[in-house]
Length: 371
Ligand code: NAD
Image (tube, rainbow, N blue to C red; front, side):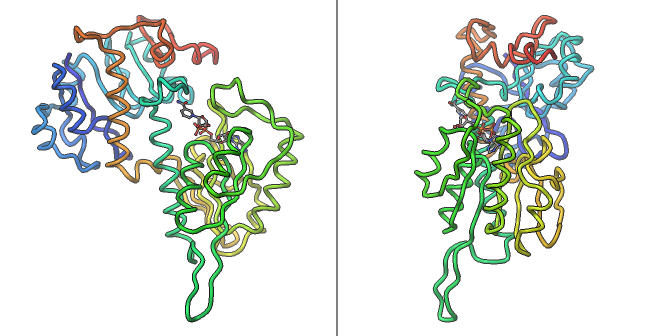
């Protein structure tokens, strides 16, 4: 099979497959075509791909001659290309308009953000691998922006207390942020609506703040669910109490397929200390604070609010490496020993990730959302 690797849009630093993963596919008998300069922002150069046995091609050549095209962003599937197989991180649940286009062009499109959160799918889970990086980077970014030390310091000039950090949402990104902040010596407090998160937070040496009466999320496939109005009010009150004491806040709270819950009001920000920093990883879906703007830094009452849901892209080498490994594991499942696609719709991984095929919407999640 001829597999193409695209150069991502200008704002993206990652690439869907690095040379080392390309070499693994070539070893299995595939031909790899890489768009010129595709890996340069991830520090994987055309020469590295060539050394792995891949060929450097133009974008037009890839769309024309490859059997399968790998990418990240939904803009990698152009409206003009027909009858092709695409695999990426296209987030169709947030961009429903592109699904119609894929249907019209008879493209078979797989989107890895739609994987089920099961043990079997873990090695392919791009949401987890990229969130893990984002959580780490959020902590490191906060440490570099915050105008004080993170750890407690005992110096000849006197002692300095450790920074107090509040983390909202203890999923993959939140837990990695907790672990990284703890390693940097911070005192950390965490909120999450899923009861299952408590044990993980405590095991990292952070405090878990419980709010009674959260809606049961045990049947939501690992994701959180929307909370009642009453719960939201009580949670806001507890967050208001915690945020007054916090120097840094990292927010990661998401509800799959929906707008992010607003957990921090303008009034809460106005009660924070001057110099405090908020890093909002939920910015792309509206943000967890009222003042978050996606891809912008807002300064209000001497508090900096950084809205960035794509922090994984600020570590493009490791982010591409993890993404490429996820992709490789997915391809091992999708491509059979004869080297062609095995569209086994009985398999929940294939069934969930296959968005369109043969002019039909396949994914149950997309169908349930009536896209
Ligand atoms: P996510 O990005 O969808 O959400 C981030 C966190 O925000 C979640 O922990 C969620 O409970 C929390 N949240 C939502 N609303 C909130 C609110 N109002 N207040 C406070 N917190 C709120 O989550 P994620 O990182 O994708 O992971 C969710 C869960 O799925 C985790 O337990 C993770 O370990 C699990 N998971 C399992 C697998 C697997 O088994 N293959 C893979 C990935 C994740």
